[in-house]
Image 1 (tube, rainbow, N blue to C red):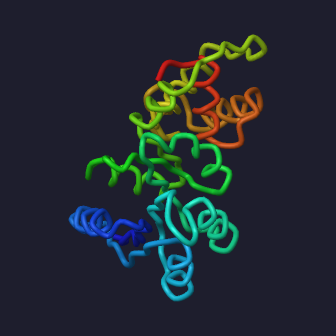
Image 2 (image 1 turned 30 degrees about the vertical axis):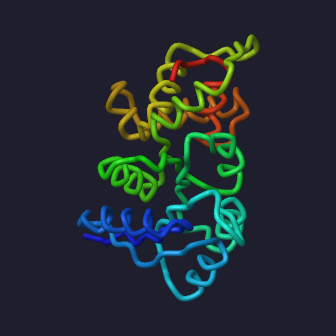
Length: 211
């Protein structure tokens, strides 16, 4: 069993310690370091190898957005999952563009933390349904007339928005993973989305799915 190494970057020490305790209860996961801001995090990365960073967005000295941009360029193999509050949904696109591969609300639970970390390690994106619902509540959907999706593409889109991986979508729909890959590629092409999180946000903003 390979251990997934994690760094928690957050300026609230009580939150960090609580999160560390929860994560270290999961056998496959080990918190190897903590940082209170982006500058401290980058210093740690000079000597510490890590698989996942749980990244707070608002931190002093260097915030999560800038830190994620720098890490994505210098350490492309490290996966960044953003930790957000409800009022920070406006940072979604910026964090995704910076290189984050997942979004969790700070009030998440142990099971979702484990699911998110294992999902991104396997190469998938992860965004909590509660976070997506928060985006939906703060966004006025607008129907698009120039997006023509097939019934199958709509099915795949809905499952992507529910956080399903390609393997899970394949099993759910009873079609090959290669076919799912093809549908995803067409969805990206038709919507102009660069990745799965952007696709989800596009779908919600344009009323293609109900979160």
